[in-house]
Amino acid sequence: MNIKTLRSDRIYQSIIDTSSEQKVEQYRTQMLLPFIKKWDIQQIPYKADASHSFDVITFNNMMNIAPQDITEDVYPLLEAISSEQFWKDCDAAVQDSLSLFEQNQIPLSVTNYVYTVLLGDSNSSVLAINEGICGDGGIPGHILVTLLPNEYTLPRIQSVLAHECNHNVRYQFIKWNYEQITLGELIVSEGLAESFATTLYGEHLLGPWVSKANMSTLNHHIKPLLEDKMDRSGFNQISPYLYGDDITNMQYGEPVGMPYAGGYACGYYLIQYYLKKTGKSIIEATITPAELILAETKEFWHETTIVLD
Image (tube, rainbow, N blue to C red; front, side):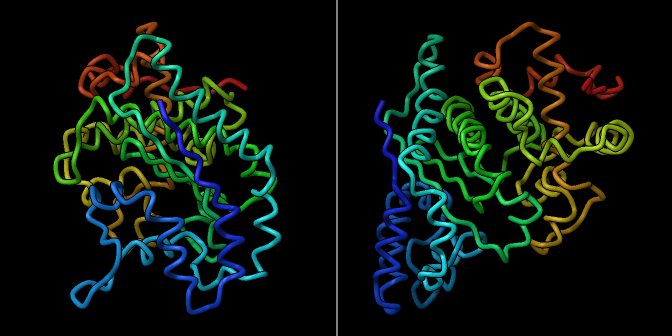
C-alpha cells in the first residue's frame, strides 16, 4: 500500500510567495492535480474552457480558501497545520485506518492513496454549520479534509480522516453512481464511517453531523421521515434527507423538512443498533451491502433510541 501525503502547508507557503497572477494555476497544479482521477470520475473539469465556467477551482472555492486569497493573511491558520506532529497524526490516522482492513483479511484493490488537508473559507456557510470541518472520501484512492483550525476541529482531524478512509474502503466493494445510489446506501455508509471513526478514536470526538442531534427529534421526526424512503435513488433528489434543510437551502435545493444532518445522525445510530444486534465488527460491516444491513435493522425504526451519558 502506497499512501502519499500531500503537504498542503508547504504548498500554501509557496503560493503565498507567488505573484497574484500565478496563484490560481500554481494551486491548480500543486494542490488539485494530484486528485485528477477523482475529478474525472466526478466529471468536474480540471480547467474551464469556453464551454465550461465550472472547474476544479470553482469547486474548491465553495468551501476552501480561494487561491487568490492565499496571502500572508492566512499565516495564523497555516501555522496550525504546519507542524510535523500534525502531519504525523494525519499519516497515522490514514495508515491505521486502511491497514485495519488488510489485517482482518480484507484485501484492498486500490493500492495507491493520496490525501491532504485544506484550509477552509471562514465565509463558507456550509463549513460554518459543520463547525469548521468536513471531509470527502467517496472516491477510492483520494481523501480530502477541509478545516478551519481551532480547538474544536484540530482534535477531530484523525477521526474525520478515519471516517473518510472508511468510505474509501467501502466503495472499493460497493459500486455506486450519482443516478442510481439509494438513500439507504447513503444513510448506511455515513453511519458506518462515523461508527468506524468512533471505534478508533472514541465517541467524545463524534462529528457535529451526529453530536448535534437531539434524541427526541431523532426518534419522533427524523426516523419517521426516513423510514419508507430507503429505496429512493438519485443523489440530487435524496441528498436533502442526508444533509438536512439548512445545507440544502445553501445549495439551492428543495428542502424536505429534515433537521441539520439528520441522515447522518440516523445512520450512526442505525449502525450502532446493527452492530449490537448482530455482533459483527465494524470492519466486517463496512463491506456489507446496505440492503443486508437494512434487513437486519427493521426494528430500529420503531424502537426509541436512547443515548446514555
